[in-house]
Image 1 (tube, rainbow over the protein chains, first blue to last red):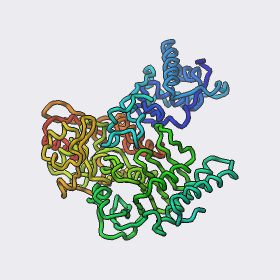
Image 2 (tube, rainbow over the protein chains, first blue to last red):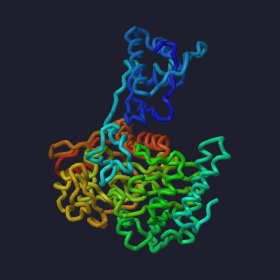
Image 3 (cartoon, rainbow over the protein chains, first blue to last red):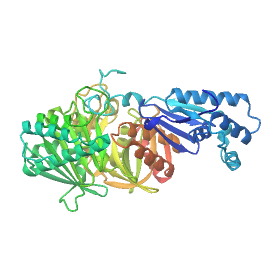
Image 4 (tube, helix red, strand yellow):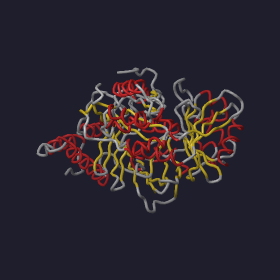
Length: 155
Length: 377
């Protein structure tokens, strides 16, 4: 991944909902869902608006002076993680003329203390097993969500 | 357009005719789907009117779910013990102002296969996807191994549920029949069928959400056995934008063998007493506590139970996002339809309602006391 890359949601298999303290993303294809926290909320929001990691790091550094190379590395790791989970895919290169406004920087500085923290996401796998079962004929006789004893783990 | 009055063999031929119709319209596959679904619907309606292929209806049942008056048409009186039992608490005497008619009938296996096989993308090959097709208000799904077809024409308020042999229908159909049809029917911007239990007290309701084994059903049952009312165990309809209401759909309840030890009086009502360790026992609440059933109530909040292992119970407030994570994925993943709409609806619901974590102890009476205190919050 290059810092000047841009990203989009990985097709219609991804749903996400934005809460004040968290973004919850759901991968309909894999059956995993994710809790995105800290500055991950801001990064997600800007990534899907086609800003590059370089532009995001710049706006975060402007909002919170003193953030350093640890933050840059954490952004890279975070985005690489989202890519490998199939939530985002690379879409192109940054628009050098696109700018994140100073108003936006002020807004994030005043509204959300959590985004000063490093970006993290937590992965939940507890529903995945059920998703991979066909709800019509792979569940046990008792019905969804009780799985059939001899159903394969993964086909 | 297909006309009715066809024998099983002739239907197969006419289905091929329909396949031929798609050839001059290469511009979009969705357009092709639409043509075929409309034709399937017209065929079913025509055969229904002409009483072809055993489409002989002998019993009408009327229920109301929320604002929807629903007519369920059954092929024989004997089938009501299977298809109507979960709705018996919602029954009404007449079919005035019916908004949805569910025409349920036993069709020949060849007839069902003919319908299934003209679906675009249909394949005999087993895979994880249950085909569904939706356009202009017509939605359809196929149960390959149970050999069923569910089809809803939302604009016309008519649905078909076709099966070939009631003994092939899995138990989950007996606890929650016509589930796909009802999910599609109630799927709107301000309404959804949600995977959750729900109980009511003094006209207010709480959703009890969480995945299997979290104590959802036993929490609901603890409340019902201690004076509260029951709206549902697995699926309920929630309606609203900022203020929400819950409507009951099924009166069935599913319990693990551990839960049944706590509520041993229910054992005699279990309809599948030889269920395995990975299965649950199914019972109908309306047969256990007839007057504990509620039809609808205003929604007060959402609780997520967690079995604590202690005698006492307690609760605490949790965030909207945590509540969403417990309520949304299980509803979304098992929905055969527009999942994005449901995600938005559940997000809206959890943002507007208080959400609680309930540490459910061993004593059912203490659980119900704690739930009552949540109602009073």
